[in-house]
Length: 73
Image 1: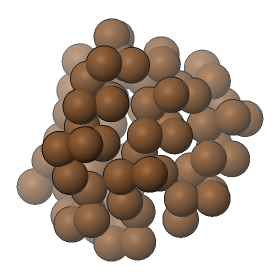
Image 2 (image 1 turned 90 degrees about the vertical axis):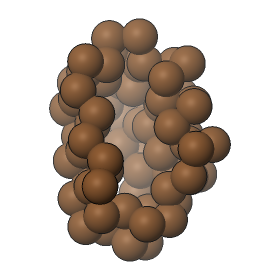
Image 3 (image 1 turned 180 degrees about the vertical axis):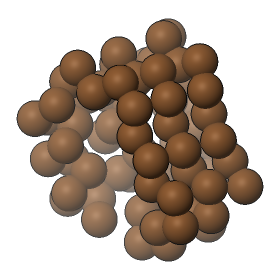
Image 4 (image 1 turned 135 degrees about the vertical axis):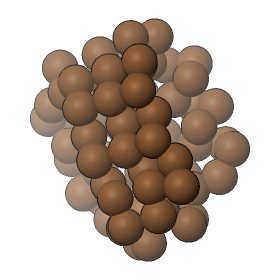
């Protein structure tokens, strides 16, 4: 959920990898929280997450300069 991702973002600022494969309840707001709070992110798997749009991906691109692997499906 968005609330869960907000907790992860605030509690794990040095997070480097996150997999949210097949999580239909996660949307843009949660991913934006991760982008803002986990700027050391290197790997992000968002395969089969239909509620995520370009808005969240743009936030990740702007806030996570170390991102080297992004999985989308």
